[in-house]
Image 1 (tube, helix red, strand yellow):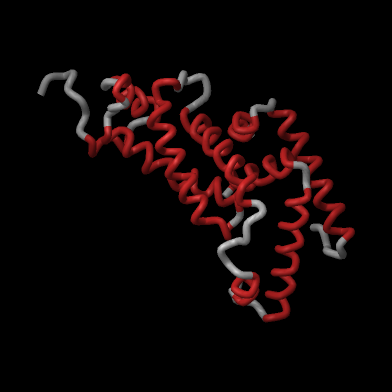
Image 2 (tube, rainbow over the protein chains, first blue to last red):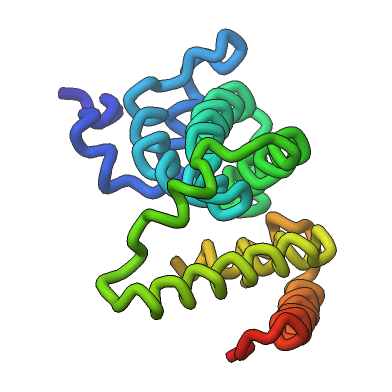
Length: 167
Length: 38
């Protein structure tokens, strides 16, 4: 095998993001035909975190929408790889796209009913504690969510992202 | 903090300030509603 031969896809898991991005971009970017194995590795790394980011902003009841965001972000990233300049690291770049995409969606889902009914939420046991404590925890959780929802948008975003990054 | 700053397109110190103000507001709102805002 010549020294310049591409690495086997199986070894992509050990490669840094920037290397994978270069592999994607070096093959016919004008036709959007990047290296599929390299891009698949980027998807494997970031699809889950992007989904969790979207859930942290939209709320758990909008998990199906968060799945759509994760899918859309990966498609957008695939199309936009050639415009990635490397000024920020790849992770920050993809999270920025995901964040903006999720905020756009949030404006639409805010006034829609969640997928889970209030009754379903109320009857879902949160922890193995007594019913009184569970009820108290649930009331407190709802109060926190309601209060967060009343904060200015930029404060909400900062808080949600902070706890998402820590999770 | 750096990742959040990139996503919000704001300097790190501004993000810290947002977080500080958000927590302070949240604390006041929860206390007002009768919750122990730990």
